[in-house]
Length: 394
Image (cartoon, rainbow, N blue to C red; front, side, top):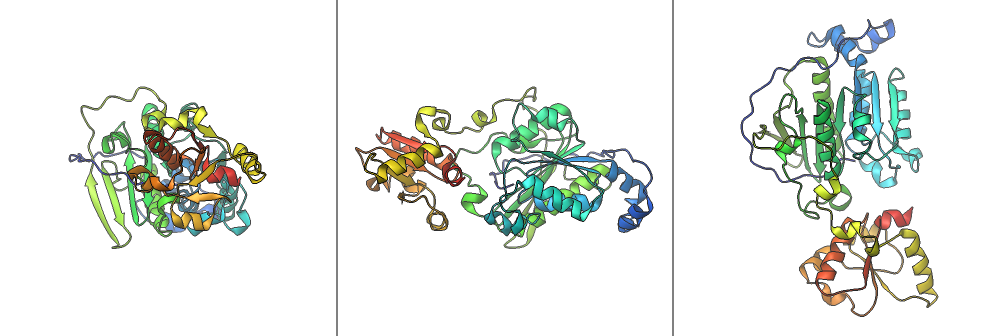
């Protein structure tokens, strides 16, 4: 799901660009479609022609999580003819606080299968295409090529920069949204006609400085606010009506119910986007995450825990998450020492010397940062769990 907010950079005013409709009209609507979309057809700016454009549109949604859930439902309800969904995750109970396209009966199913069922229950006329893969530099261009428009609901910076660069290389627009706690952001990027994501955020934040939703939490209803705004922008782009958010960033504070706007302009000094790169390296992931000698698999951890219970192994398993996460779920036999205390040194007196250490967090990012901090403090025999408690639970 979508989840990270990044500190803003200064921007310059951007001149408005009149954009043509993104999609040509398809064939005339049938009787059932005329009834279904009558409230759109009654709006002069959309009318029957606009509805035909929507039915002829092909939209790819990245992530069937917090932002993807409302976005997919409203795109389907609006009559977008083809919806692609890319996601490689499964439904968990903790998703249901905000991912409204899924239900209790979907727990354990893949999110894309669950989402497709909900979409077809809402609008059987939608063609749903599933991409059960993790988006990366090897498949992004091929997948994007089949769609008119992309909605980015990704929850990590590496994917966001990948989406931006792939869309720019293909000359395609995309709608971007981001949420964390009570704050949301939404904009439109189209390198062909205006700024792209790199003009707003030239560099990713330092690893560990911005928590994910899983680490920092998210106000569930915020997903609907930002997701609906993303679909609003998509429909305007497809039909060519109104003024889009190209060159503008909307920021929403759910606690005060206030929106504010920041102008974005292309950076004339920015390097042109000419190829896809390794976005994990670009986003500065901790080197330990790339070093297999400092990683232990969830299966290996399970085996070592069993051997430790039998007195055949000796190590300390340290959970570097926050106390509330530890209360919700924990690996038996683990000791809680949150990352912040390890990084600033205030908790090092709780970390024993002279014994092997195994670190874990939710998915591996924070434990890699803790590993680097402990190595800098002189700890030698330290590894961390690849995939964190998520991998161990699976």
